[in-house]
Length: 143
View (tube, rainbow, N blue to C red):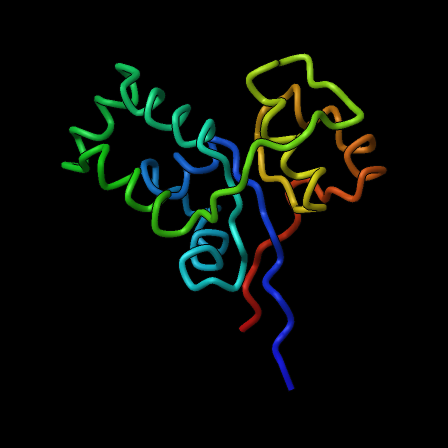
């Protein structure tokens, strides 16, 4: 008997920062799922480039320095856990924030869950559901 495939997830850049820069307690279950492979994290090269760029922002760099956490370590988490995919075709719905569109497109193309805190994405919850995308599904790990 084979195990079911892990749920595919797309993580926007702020969620990745929550997992490995800010160490948000609310993100602990999701981080565990990604690190253990019980959830499959899919991403694109453009998403990695965005993360690398954001890690250089002064407010993020200051946080990395305070935690003695090199940006390369965060990128190594991306490289270790994200399954790179080609850029996805444009989804039927457009986000008002063009920077978020790549996350939506990938989630729609793979019917993956999308994790985001961005207001421009959150307001699309019903439209994304029509495309088979769950927005911020619960990631608690049963005891």
